[in-house]
Image (cartoon, rainbow over all chains, first blue to last red; front, side, top):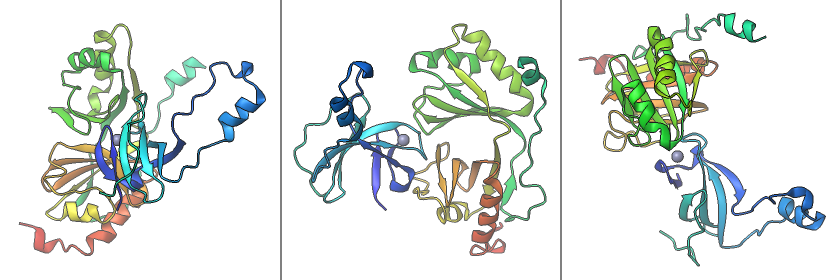
Length: 97
Length: 193
Ligand SMILES: [Zn+2]
């Protein structure tokens, strides 16, 4: 089974986790001052990366916390996981373990 | 409406009453259960109020006679205590934390406990739980939320061959019956000392 490293609990089985979509997408502080185009972009447009992808995960059947992960969408290899609020780790490629 | 809420006496459910189970599984004694949430800055005051150190590692248990506090996450603890101490726990936090930087929710009517005790306990749980339950990976005193087949549980190892399982009332008969089914592969006679 694929193991995912929760920043709080350590390595845990994949089925304890839930996917939460692309990470680092900030909601506008004042949505009413945002143009329709920018709001549409925020709601619907995603990178759909082939390769390294920063995404949110939730350890829902564990500590319950959200965190971010860098995953290679080609190999499904988790390159790094990090806490909410931390910067995206500086990695340019996913290496197989 | 507030008066109504305060004066209702909820009936604690008995989801396993009358259901046949594995001989190594037993229904835990009734106990008080709370979900405690608080920020890091309040951990010290809460620990002093409850007489147990809440600052221990995540997925570990702090314990004293009649009270166990399971750290399920960075800001979440499950408090299991003697049924009679229910009011005292709330009062202790109320006294010790006048700024009220905590949330204490009575979940005693939501979930129930199952104790699985036997030489094959870890192997039996492994039939439905994806965690590594080897004693080195999941030692005595470790506790975490996880899954057991289709049910979410909190699993706490209380001895090398004994586990305490916390499960929501509606899932309890399922877990109970599944343990009985799994137990057929682990004959009891050979394991009793
Ligand atoms: Zn976790």
